[in-house]
Length: 111
Length: 115
Image: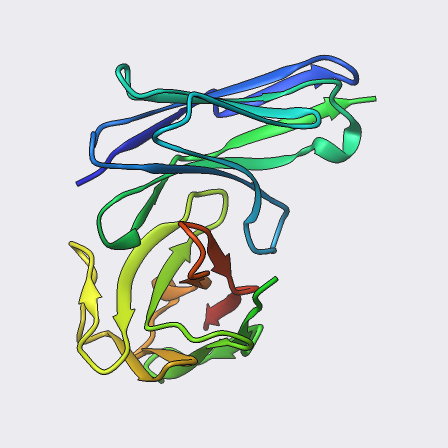
């Protein structure tokens, strides 16, 4: 089955700096790669996603890049703010719509 | 956007008892729903795929006789944790495909504590 690795597990940045989280996947059949933000005790919230036929997507301060050949994708957050502090998960979706999640990154943005 | 609800939001039960968690799609139909389990400070792990009108498919290592899934209608899937034990204490989250491309809608989760 699919295996998703996510790095780093924790990330601390100063407010205004950029944050980058990277994920790799193993199944070349995976074709959809969402990123989620999860606050404690709450459901994952989709923040951006990318399909396998696209290399890059941007939404204001958030961007995602995908390298299908290398099987890795990355989340980029620019101009970080304290409210960006949360746990971020990458995921890869493949056969039958099943998603495999990375282990998560705890992002802390220091004011 | 589409809404998925779960009930209850939290439940405490005694060891050995069973507890049922409901997942509903409120404004759309879902022939498929997914059940995840999330232990503290860990990731979401897919437990099973719930299919309306047919048997659920379980991920490797998930006991189908312990985690009973019933997808009785196009808007309701239930997960019953049978003979619950303290190690079953976790955050259980369901999701349903939006029907638009690939996006999933997640329920708010159910916090299960087994004493």
